[in-house]
Image (cartoon, rainbow, N blue to C red; front, side):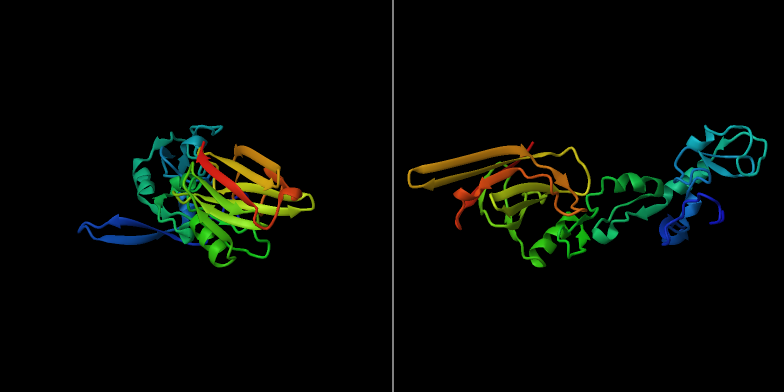
Length: 269
């Protein structure tokens, strides 16, 4: 198959390795051009069931069922039925490729046609540093270390359902759960007071949801002010920086001083 074919999806520039067993049981490695693992019609990865014409030209089951002339090969025009090719299916299933998030710490290897499915949920897929002057990206674990070591942002480790207090201080506060889920508490100063938001940093949408409760209490002489809000924590990859339209808690300037603190409780929804 030539790269000059219109609409052809290019294989990745790097070659992937697969392993097989020799007769003596010792492993060996071979290199495989990824394009030979793709359906020549739709250019998607071949996956069982795989069919071939009498000459041996392959096609995936989806494309096979859509051919306008099912008794004629799409490639060589040979008049024949398409038959199941179990040998190729076995070879395709035995070829293992690494996740593209290997550099972010993922050690998972899957069959080539299952790699995309894995990568849509890979926990090591990258998130991004929200600092506009920084181009760092990495897994949430790498990102947390980057925030603390490189930017020296404040950090707190918490237990779900337990309260902790933090100063109402402009900037980003890194908070992480006991299971290493990563959250950011962002405080922005405005003329009218401080605007506070909380985000769950994750590479993919998941069924796991969190709720956050924020509260402040203020006493000045006989004057007392109490404020409370609870909400579902929005999630983000930070690919576009910190979300700007998600202010969840506002503390009026009148109730703020240098020792003002906010109480934070995060729990799994």
